[in-house]
Image (cartoon, rainbow, N blue to C red; front, side, top):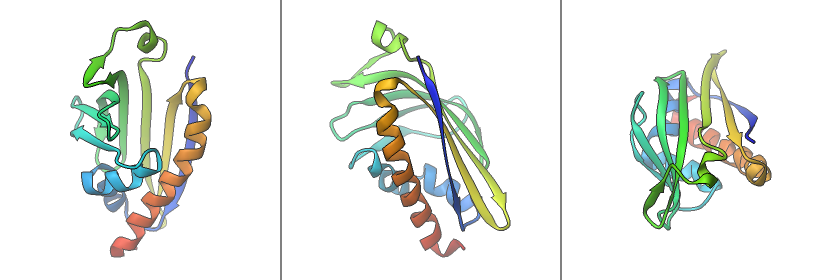
Amino acid sequence: MNKTLQFSITIRAPREIVWERVTEKRYFDEWTSAFMPGSTFEGSWNTGDAIRFLAPDGSGMSSIIETSRRPEFVSIRHVGEIKDGVEDRDSEQVRRWAPAYENYTLTEVDGATEFVVDVDVTPEYEQFMRDAWPAALAKLKELSERSGAA
């Protein structure tokens, strides 16, 4: 059974800058290293696009961008796992949690951006997400603010 966790951070930068830091590969790879060093993605962030979130060994998540409204909201629908280069959307293991959503909401507040993440997790990944998301958001904040955007 999935549970939805929420994390948020205020970033002293316009939301266009924060959106760019979230979705451009060179920045994404840096802030998501909090989950696993070497993490990356393949694909793009437009509504309906397929996107794969990958660990250095090629394992990861197969996903679809459910909704993308630059620079205010993106909804990622995770639909499968990737192991040994093979995408699995149909096994019983995947059907237990899929689909799972990861939503990012960016709201401008007094010249800053409130970045809110709502993420569906299974019990076995809940503590990992509780530990990793705050670290990832701190990296995203640092990347966004050091750009001279504030």
